[in-house]
Image (cartoon, rainbow, N blue to C red; front, top):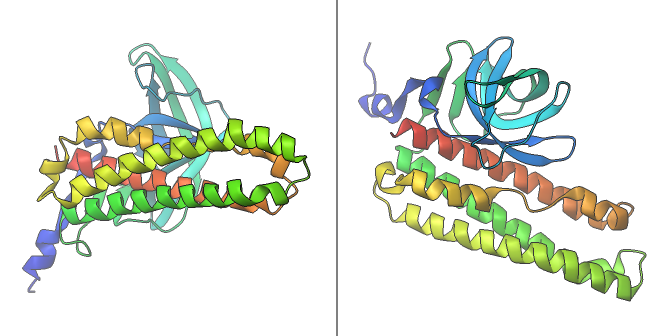
Length: 271
């Protein structure tokens, strides 16, 4: 049997999950709080993660909480990215929390990257992108455009919400100054960081040129993290059409986290 050598070269060898040494970003569903975690182990019963105290974005997780991990786990062809915390305990060896989650929800992956639960390996299929740098360029572009989309939604909300909510012009002006202006400034600054990162990636000839990456990754992570907390807006917008904009923003934020986590996997695969 003859094989297409070009295809063979474009499919990255599978990597053990022990090669993933950088933290991912997840979301605690009940309060939409973003947190960092380290992937420890995978099995048919679920995944094990660690949240050591040295992580900048650490959050405590509790049994019964739902979590979006924003990483595609392949269990016998079923793609899972969300689950429920089944157990947790403090581990003195890592000086932090060890957590087990039962995975039960998912969707088709955004990128050709899967973590195979059966084998505990990372599968990266580069045939569509031809190279890891091509895949990273796509991820960086997605992150930049998604954050820019959030900024556009926020500008629309700031301009039109005064006609959509049942509060006085004075109350809305105070809300806009304290909440909207601050959030828009943060999103704008983060969008600028992701634009700069995208331009750096476009000029890179290979992944190694980008991944002095661990230096860039912390700044990128901070720019990726969500700026919107739904609870802030519910009191004013919950019964208005404006709430649909907020929920649409949350969907964009979820997609950005997926792009970031995929970049983490490529970074670890390039060390």
